[in-house]
Image 1 (cartoon, rainbow, N blue to C red):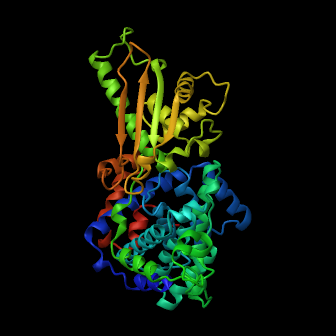
Image 2: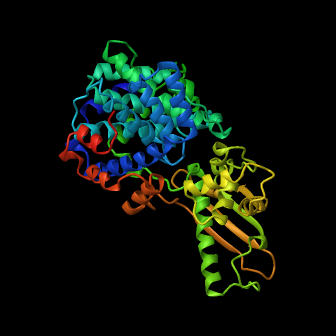
Image 3: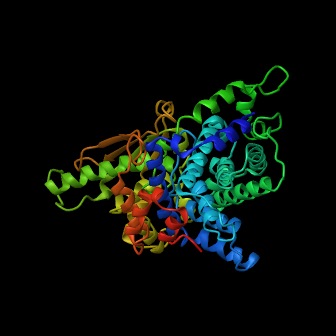
Length: 481
């Protein structure tokens, strides 16, 4: 049974057995998480969640309620880390769980920084391994893996922090399986439900761990049983591994899990620079490269531009985007709110051409000027809309065959006659992937841009966190109650 394997892995995972590269990546992911979470607390999603908790519970922000809010906050900006093969965002679930439990003084968890890293990395590995096992089937069936599989990740972290034995860890993960939820329609319909999935995953993962700790049973067959998670939520995968009596032969699935739990997939986690769905990023990168080329030629006076001024984007006749299927499905030409915008490929490309940067503040400013108001006369908004009207998106089968190994997008900018030469650029690995990583300086810059009032010197303690207790680390970072 897969739950047996996951539980065995968790209880035996020790800091000294984790490669240094994975430890350092976990620390980078922690810094990135804090950058997004702290700014995400200001988001409308998180503020509504906080207000709701106060209405229901008063001032009782226990670990469950805190985890719920932290999960929503850290996923609401669409800037949290992810894994392209697993097709989910592990960091927002994993770190929200750990932060909620360790910062709750009522729990008084006596763990070391090494044990914190064990729990975090264990959560990443379980989330990624399960995500790789069930996707693309799970996603094709309409589920948002960050919410569904994220519940297992949260339960794994909570179990590890509570030092549950194998039997109780199994019960915890079984309870996670029966509570896992999250529909992709919430993502693509432009709703706050997308961030709710993460808050819900954290809440249910912590709840499952404490229930199991106190003797509540969950069962070991809830992932690969005949009526378990795989049968219900990745039915094509189930059917491919059934015997003649429609019973799941999980030997190959178990072999896959066993092999992948040893690979420390956290090293392949990507970090995001732009607050848009990850499937849009390769098109953004291609667009920004072309914009840089045009701006450079403009400065050198090498463009056939008789106006001798900055590029006039009205000279664009069309923008053709060739990309893979999932990316091409993000074809919302009329976003109605910030959640819609994060899922809109046409608007992401248009904004990339118009604005000097794609930072959260710049996009928020554009929204405040009336991006969703049809009557807005702001010049930047009018440019964005003009460019959007010229964008054509095509699902390219050749590029689709490269997924998930790559996430490719080709952007071609065509100009009216006698203005500029047509340009094309293809991005195979979006910025932030392991093959095209953000530098340490990039991560710190992202943190500073999102949280300009934060004392950046405090982040140094994460680099050397093993020299301190986890409570000293959290106290330095102002994460304790």
